[in-house]
Amino acid sequence: MTSTPDAREDDAQASPATAVPVTPTAQELALALAALDEIAPRGAVGDVVDAVAEGDGVVAVRHASTLSGYPDWTWTVLLSRDVEGGPTVLEAALLPGEGSLLAPAWTPWADRMAEYLAAKDAASADGDDDELDDHDELESDLDADLEDDFDDDFDEDVDALDEDVDPIDDDGDGADVDEDHDDDGGRDA
Image (cartoon, rainbow, N blue to C red; front, side):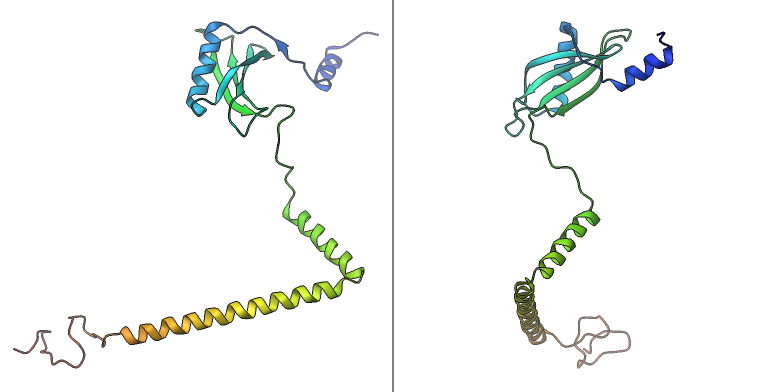
């Protein structure tokens, strides 16, 4: 069986590439630490875990995380090796390891709501309507109480404002309405 270039490319894309361990140079290690100093909190970067070739001329240098909430995470710096003038930082990030605690996958609101409505329908079909009715009554009582409290507080605030109101100053000169004024806005002398 002969292999064509297209078949080899398909095989390469189908199987994930395995990371090849490499030994970083002192310059690459210093550059990785300098990049991490810019983004990581002081004392958050631990010792070098490993360095692996990520592709043609790209090496990933990984440092242990010493952050309290990130025990299995690594600070990873991708460096380009084949650049004239020395290595260059491509990217720096805090990445999870295999045993890291991760947030669950995001579920769209419509899916979460559908699950809730299905559970509610299943509960009403099972004859749990009495519990739902009791819950609805409690909610309506709570809403009524909150509304009453708000109305009472609002009424007290309005009454307090009515007592503190000064007579109206229509022309904005600081004098009350019942004071005599000249046409030019001055007070009688």
